Image (cartoon, rainbow, N blue to C red; front, side, top):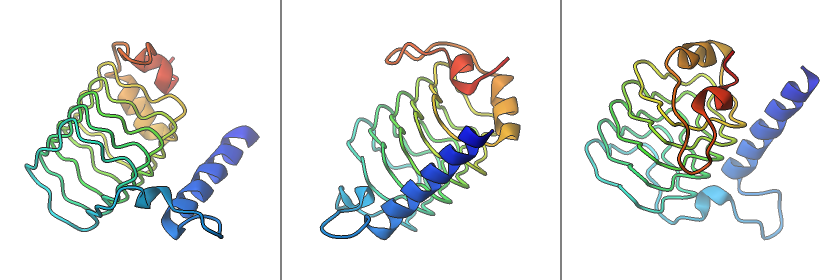
Length: 168
């Protein structure tokens, strides 16, 4: 239990470092690696398939039915974003700060959420075949719901979805 709490604290602090721009000196925030900032924008129906969006901020952005298939969304800030019915097939969402994100009815097949922070996010009616959630911090209720539909193995990491969620 202590290691889970310590890990949660570390991830939250890392998220704050991302948001606040580093720990001082000449540190550059990871979220500023990409010069495009989509915070509070409406990106519904847009096509970002295959794009490198690593380090971009999509905080509170609306991305209804947007296409992010095979996009690199690693180390992004997605807080309060909405991906309702979005295509995130084989997208890399590793190390994302994705609290309170709505993924309802999204296709997350073969996506990678490795070491992502996904607290208070919604995953209603999602497709997660082959998704890898290894090391991700997810609410227990959401894990229980995702375990009911978890199947497949991620083709890149070779980790079974059920194992990555800790399903029993």
